[in-house]
Length: 112
Image (cartoon, rainbow, N blue to C red; front, side, top):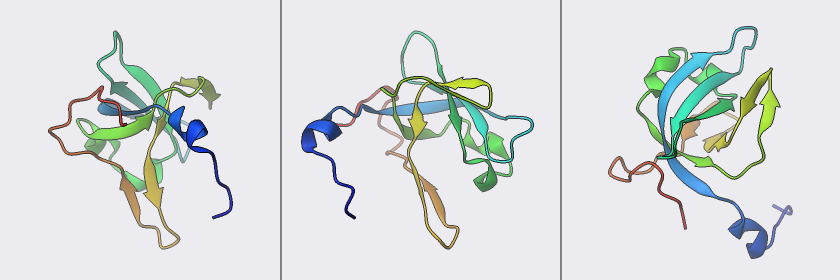
């Protein structure tokens, strides 16, 4: 991997544990789900994620705690504002995994 960043750049990334409160299909998109995520902030955040193909029943995501980047600038995706990015990995064979901390880690906890 040749695309390296400095430690100072990496230190700017805010990684936070969030609990998915709802997951809804975005009509007209084959890839996107609208997630409402609790980070123990005043209100839940809306995060748009391209993980729909891995979850034929998107409701299985409700209640999961996952890691998110929470200090990205808001971005409009398919007409919806997204306020973060879900951490997940996939490979060329179609294997997919969310990055899920132990369930005992409280939502709102920052990595670091």
